[in-house]
Amino acid sequence: MTKQHANWSPYDNNGGSCVAIAGSDYCVIAADTRLSTGYNILTRDYSKISQLAEKSVMASSGFQADVKALQKQLSARHLIYQHQHNKQMSCPAMAQLLSNTLYYKRFFPYYAFNVLGGLDNEGKGCVFTYDAVGSYERVGYSSQGSGSTLIMPFLDNQLKSPRCCYSTV
Image (cartoon, rainbow, N blue to C red; front, top):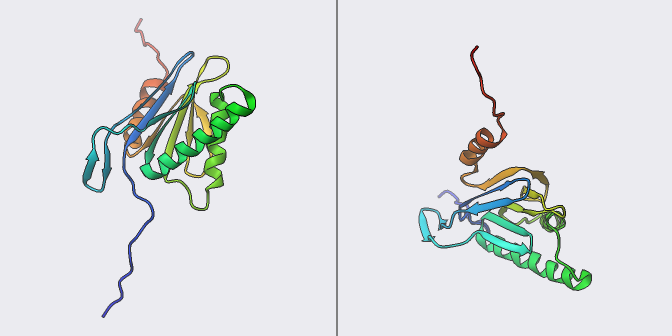
């Protein structure tokens, strides 16, 4: 009789993709609305986007229970910030708060893949992309989730490549 190991995991990947694009005076954030587990679609009407502050929006894919716990933690920390400073947190400050929150849970991390976007203090669009343990970078555009391997090459082609015209003389 052979021994069998239990294949239990505290995480589930509920799928999903999110994307953010920043410009000189705007930021666009989008995500799909399907929530699934394995081959089962649980709902087709689930928002993966959450407004954290007046000028900060986060889109997350991955394990949605962890995403909701992360959103709740960030909302509580933002409320404390508002009471202490009597103002809304800026998008770069929220980006640092998200990084610190993810890093704090690095030994049992949130299974969430996040993109944070909004406007900075100068009114310029900003996008921050994260890994699971809080390392982040400010970029012009980013994608996270199961579809990011298809979305990022498209964004690279459309937004990063030089726009030049070749003329024949």
